[in-house]
Picture 1: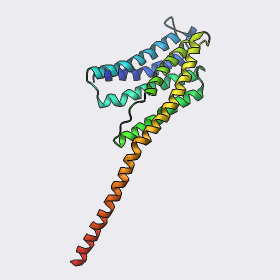
Picture 2: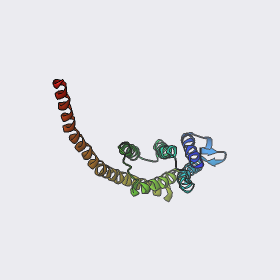
Picture 3: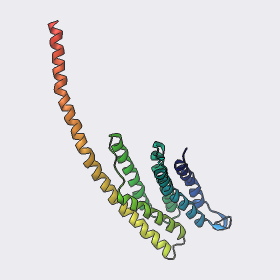
Picture 4: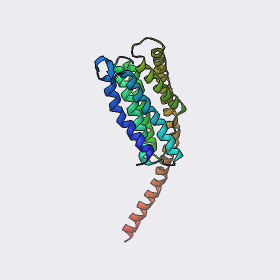
Length: 214
């Protein structure tokens, strides 16, 4: 296994560790003398860093593999979803906002998988990248601003609203591009089927003529 894929696997293993740190009630809210929110933010920050680093190394080293293309987006979604659901449990993020964000991820992933199955690659939306950056800011700020006081928590709330808006707009953009890309292809498939039907009919008639002639 190459280095980029190893970093992606490490990000997946960080997911349960993040959930344990954020949701476990440690005595004094300390882990080895460090506030658990700082530890949780560090774990999430490390996971987010590996998200950028594995892609950079894969391109630089020309080590882009099928395994990496499959597990990298999976690792991203696991990390973000685990962090957001933990924030809901900590009463730091509204459940409806998290439901919208995660629901968008499932919908877009399904669309891209369907398009890929038909031989079409739907490129990542620029809004999707903005959403991802806003998610990282929102999650880090909400974890660190757990006491709901100060500007850090306000930044987290604002970033979370930005994530919801970007998620909805980018999802609409994906649906639009999905229809634009696949509709002509579906029309071509239907046309090809209609073209084949007369040929098949003529072939069947010829077969029947030969059979009766015999």
